[in-house]
Length: 464
Image 1 (tube, rainbow, N blue to C red):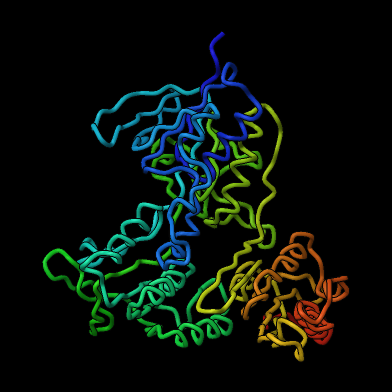
Image 2: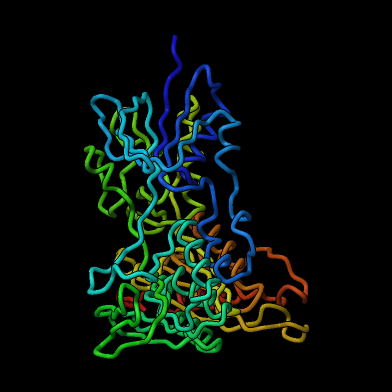
């Protein structure tokens, strides 16, 4: 009897985690695994690309967790430079194009793992196809940008469009490389994943390292000289630019799945059940291309994070390997480090809590990362959003100096377990002066949120 055949589309976190877990559980005699990746790398840290561009991580090889050859030695047949262009779910086959030769062929499957990831949002504006405009999504993008920065024609002026995680991290990376950097975003404050008052703290940090902010501004087009970008047009004004970074976010890469009749959910990601099966016979999906269940809002969401992708890939791999596993959802936890500030968030922002139908109270607390008298104590601002009457934590945000961001993990655990702010305020957290005040900032914020919930009492419903 021939081995069952698993084809994996996509060679990064979700796809290769699934392939690796399935291989641990089933031998090559039982399950043949073939992976197709259109790029030149597998299993790398996309989150590390800005740090490579900025020179903090000197070698791109440091970002690669497992090379194609390592996967092959483990019994996963990896094909680089191969793009899957179509899925035929009736025939159980995919169409694969060799990007070097242009030759297409059909490959049969018994099980199919769709891990196509996400694609960067690129504006449909005049001049958007000029050279030196980068959407930093895959390792090849980071390598191309570093080649430009290290060349004899190295740019002096950069414009970053979009003030999300990638945009801010890339702005700092370019400052570290000695460029003049301007940042453009149509929102009033950077980081739309934070409430505006917390985003304002990030704006202060960006200005402190020399980034010029153009907030509340929309990009109207790109000026070019020859085929290269020379400026970014905003509100009738042109910002000079030798290089442009697009940090406008990403959307799930679902075109391939959707064309095959695989269902896409309301958030824009491939719809899957708790085991990561799509509902189409033999077809599974994981990673940035899928939608997930948000455990706080109760709604489907598309959240592109490597943490989710690796966990989902493992769950799918367990199931493909004959076991049973489920993916229980997310609470939307994310952290980053920008211009000396650590930034973290989990759960719902105020606007998201309101959209989900919650009545809530929100509090903001300023404290210090260590005991105030201890050398190195630095500011930390913590914001909590809690449901009125019940006091259930709905979301949290933290902006502060070193030692601030990972405190979000306590609040993420609290969210996961639907704890109230009063319960959080009573948590037995570690204390010593080098690490926190006797009342940790998390506990102070929870205590203040509990007081706000208590004061709301039986007031009429409304949002804070």
